[in-house]
Amino acid sequence: MKHRHPLIIQWLAVAGLFFFILFVLYHEQIVRYQYKPTHVAPANWIDRQLTGEIVAGFVLEQPLALTHTDLPPRERRHVFCIGLLMSNYLNRRNHGEFTVALSAGGRAQVKALRARDVRDNALQMVCFDEFRLIDVLGQDARLTLMGLDGRPGRSVTGWLSPQPGLPSAIRGGEPAGAALVFDTFVRANSAPFQHNAYALMIIASLVLSLMAVASRAGPRAAR
Image (cartoon, rainbow, N blue to C red):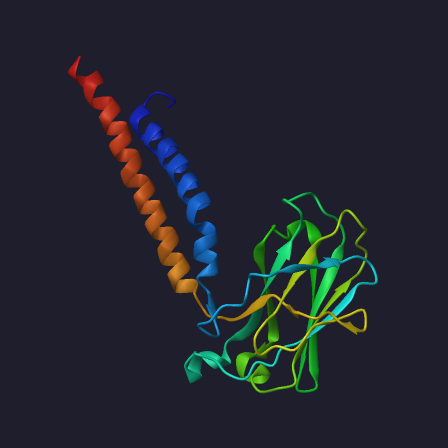
């Protein structure tokens, strides 16, 4: 059985390799497709300063002041998410956990994050399943970052920057002089798109591997 269908075995092996390469290249983009920004204008990523390491005892509050959106009414009922611009110092190995809380309309939800999962200078997506965008629009909403057990030298930080229309963040009970850098999103149901994308990746892998195996088998058959 080992040598009965060598070309089929080669084809499947090469197809698996192609699929792995395509998965690594496009998986993150496929996953992020489900997040739709609530507005066209992105947050200000220039003139930044670090919030300071999110260690045990760290507390930073940021009023949202989200009053408008570019999304149509039906998409305002999707789950509300934020994308925090974080830094972990050139992707060093960090430890500990911190929380991101959202409060609006007399309700609150707290999400715990692990410092080791945060990527340097990338948006850390946090979704609050108990809130829809319509629950936050026009409300006295607030984000709160709180360190749980982080240690200096092994913790992540956020970024602060002047943000038009946003009040200053409150760090340790005092105004920070700048607002937290983040963008707001909704999480749409993108399962059909993701399934189709992975199916296309499988088909592409099979076709590419068939071409590769056939190109090698052709010269051998001619000998």
